[in-house]
Image (tube, rainbow, N blue to C red; front, side, top):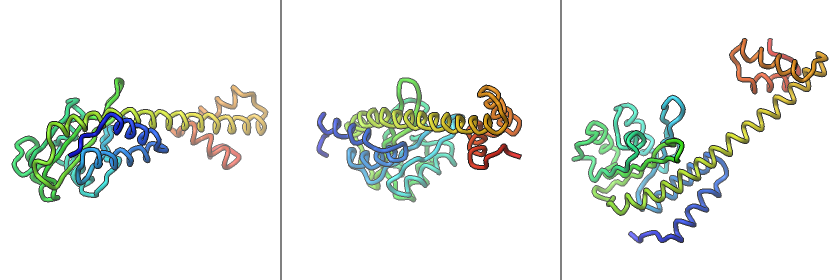
Length: 225
């Protein structure tokens, strides 16, 4: 394979940061990883609060099936890459002795070589980048190095997209709550503090997110029944 140059990685970084939103960033990571490491198919697994793992982007449905098998078997390089902060190469799933149950099952999916790399920042584990090939012995140690560099750029881009999405959601929530407060103030002759207290009480009593209570007030012009 042609080894990527520094300029190539600079272009990759710009392409990843140029994606609009978390989902677009995930899709772009998967697509560019296939081209950068020259593989058949690629996917991104992400870990949520409570250690729930989800396949967030794939270039081929076999990747999704392979990921689901890891969760079903409770083992696999993608899961272990997240836990052990490592890079894993499987040269041939038909003979691999690690994660043997998973490897034998993905062989039937025509997955023969695997490269799994942790996605992370200084503050958190985001998930793993998982690159697959239908050819045995496809990935080398040099591919692992290139995949690690790519994963670093992907991690930063994805973390930035998640942060931006969180800020947008927080701003939207604040705006919605402010609108709801204004409606309650006008309708029930409340001051701002008491209007917020009413929203919070409904949220706590009914176990509904505060933003959803505010959304109801704005949409229905009244409080939930």
